[in-house]
Length: 417
Image 1 (cartoon, rainbow, N blue to C red):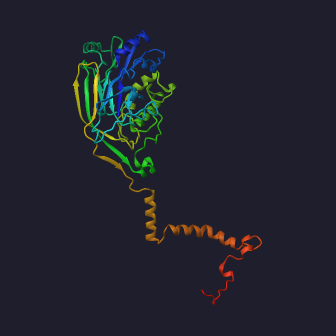
Image 2: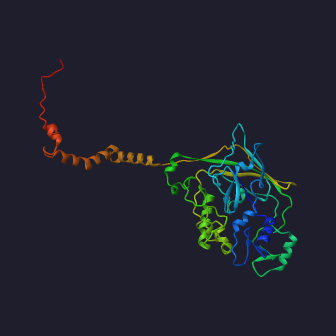
């Protein structure tokens, strides 16, 4: 249910950049800090990016379910996403095919469940279904931003950078390039906040006959009906990631270097990242089929089994601790459930056809069988019965098969005595 993704920490990027690239420039693309060097040298971005990411032990601590503690990293397992490596609990989209799942049981005996854990680094917590994945188009209502904000320069430095007014689309200060489109320039509060979210869940059940119907007709896909390349199981969010990958290949002939299950030769170099930045609106904003605004249309069906998760209330309390304590809790036990029923299946079609034929034609399924017999089998029987005695072993042994040719004479004086 919970998926934790670390945000970019400039405090780690800058020292590494000074070691790797003595004379460097940095570019900001939709909040993802990409090390950019305006020369022909190619930089292995995925390799260097892993050096500034935190492992599970440095990301999560003090996990508990309904007050019962458990080891965080035994159940929060790594997951590859298009925004980097995340740590997810009870997911089916992780790197491991059969990860250990924690029994998150909510019933009348145990009551509504609540998971609680500490996030030691700035990041985002996603409240999603087990088949869903974090992406750049995940709804903001499904995301909890945690940790102190370390992504921006101070307001004094920003004012000085703004005063420089460089002739290009970014604000330049001390070798750093700040994109004007970056949404948050104000200095964030120095202390993190402890978010507490109450949610409700409505599960979905499917009729057994739903699997016999094509996905195009039932308008949803099961997790094992997966035509995608980026993930092993299908979900709507995974489908949008696949759609975005194909759009990136179409526009720039390469993909974001975080794209899951993508060969290294298809991941973008510096020129490819600049190309992705130039087509940002065309590949990162979803739109409807009928919309004329810039964006990406993805023909993706929802999952047939995903539950509906609704946010009831969010609470945030400022803390003096250097970490954030996140708590996600069911407000009440589920009292509603959606069910997808098949109104007319294959058997219903056969029954309806038979009933209509019997009503208007006086025919039944036996009539159709008899019709097949009359048209196909009986002609061959008649031909076989007319064969000569020399070539027919049955005729040589038993004589003529027809009753009228057997010369049977009944004994009229026979009786049971």
